Length: 294
Image (cartoon, rainbow, N blue to C red; front, side, top):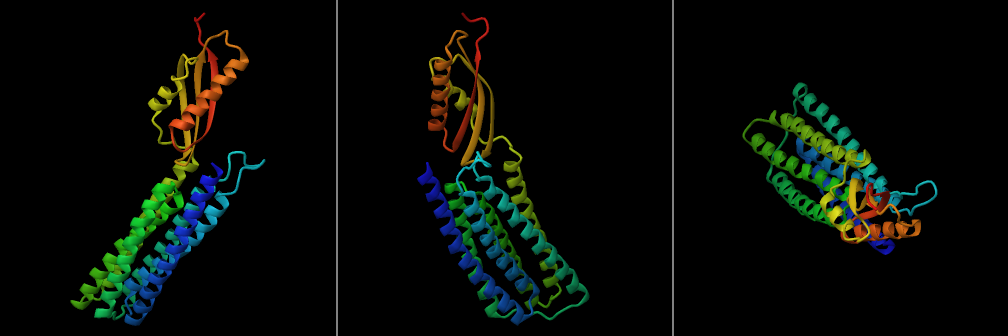
C-alpha cells in the first residue's frame, strides 16, 4: 500500500513538472506576441496560461504535503490536503478573471489599435494544439491516479483552450476592421475563467464537506453478506476522495456470539470490502445482536 501511494505521488509530481514547462512555454509565446501586436485578448490569454503554471506549482506543493504519512495529530492521513490545495487553483483563477474583466472594461474607455498578422494566428494555433494535448493527457492521468490536483488542473487547461478559440475569433474580427471586439473577447475570457474556478471549487468542497463517496452500497452489502456469521447489513455511510474512501456500517450477528468471534467477523468484513472495492482505506464495523434470534 505504501509503495503504491509513493508511486502515485511520484507519477503525479512528474506529470505536473512536465506540464509546468509546457504551460510556461505557451504563456511566454502568447504574452510576447500579444504585447508586440497590442492585442489585449492574446496577452490576457497569455497571463491565463501563466496562471496555469502557477497552479502547477500549487499542485506540486499540495501533493508533497498530501503524501506525508499518518501521525498522532493526523490519524487519517493528509490526503485531503491535495483537495484543499486544488481550492488554491480556484482562487488563483478568480483573481485572474477579475483582473481580465477590469482590463476588458478599460479597453472600452481607452481603445487601442490591436494588430492581427499571420504570426499571431500561427502562435495561437500552435499553443492551442499544445494545450489540447496537455488537457487530454492530464485528465486521463488524473483519472487513472485519482488525483484531484491533476483533474482540477486539466479543467484549468480546458478553459485555456476555449479562451484560445475566442482569441482566434477576435483576431479574425480585428482583421475585418472591428478592433473593439478585442475588449469584448477579453471580458468573455474572464467569465470562462471564473466558471472554471467555480467547477474546481465545487468539486473540492464536496470532498472537504464529506459528501457521500461514489460507492455502490448494494455491492458493499453483497460483500458483507459473504461472511457466513453476518445476518444483516445496514446504515452504510461513505465519505472521502476516490483514492481514500472511508466506510462505516452496522451488521447484525447472533446475540450469543463471543467477543473474540465478533472481532474476527469485523476483521473479515473489513478485508472483504477493501479487497472488493478499490480506493477503500478505512472500514468501521458496528456489530449488533440480531433481536428475536436465538
